[in-house]
Length: 249
Image (cartoon, rainbow, N blue to C red; front, side, top):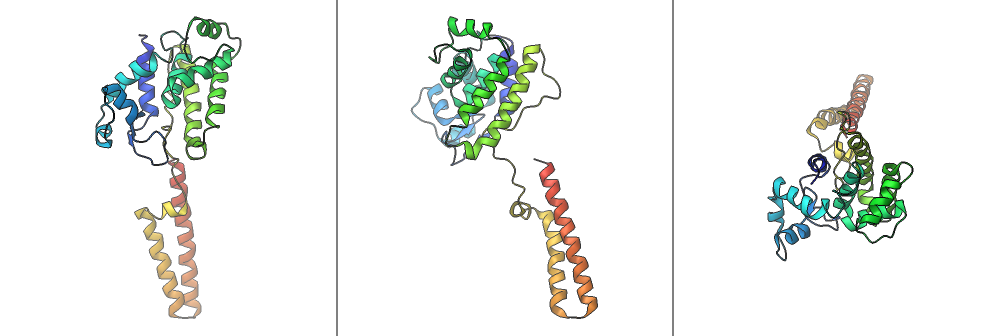
């Protein structure tokens, strides 16, 4: 197999998160992007438990990627850069779908198998194949019913994979090109509800309670002025906290 497979696997583990058991994900329990069904098939058993998925090692996951995704995605046949894109797409949506999308872009029969005709069409393609293939992948993903839930993460991943593929095609991975968010990860929630779950939010909230007590304890101008000052400070504090949370996403 190509030496670029090592790079592809490193980038893949950057994109795929650890153990995930999201009830909204039709793939079910996963780790390193390997679903419980894929793990069971690799081990030659009918099923595996969530606990077995949870202890999946990176070494076994890499072997599954090599045996069940890289070869089926045409990893040793396609041009460098495109090979990584098809591989990554195949991990997300299955190698057959990934190859069919490539075949649609280059205009050959969509049988889902990388053969001589597909390789020849890819090599003869005029234009930006990396960009065209990324656009086709997004087009397909937007047809999925889970797009509203996972679409933002998927789109970020495609953007990141496209940039990485261009660097691989040039023979390097630029220091500034970093793996994107895992495809199944939801964006961080910076809503006020989530912010208030953080311990640092309770300082401003304590001040707010103090302000309320001042308002209720009297109607004099001193109490009102003190309360207004405290409330203003709380607003500024919470605003800064929300901004910090947003910058971390």
